[in-house]
Length: 60
Image (cartoon, rainbow, N blue to C red):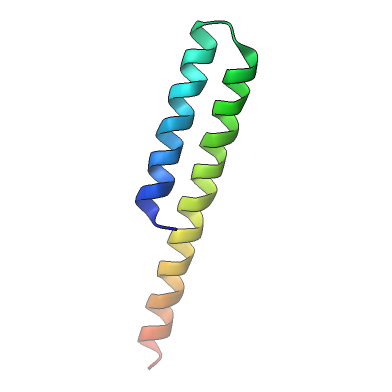
């Protein structure tokens, strides 16, 4: 999973969260928060993978 996909998922989640808040739709708001958290996790995973590749390449 790429870092950009994680960022995109965070943005999509933030949008749902804001719409849910404005519409007083707690379900949509919570789904948005969950999607935003999943996006952060995917971004962190991509960062960790990049760091591991960097370490691996440095030790060749």
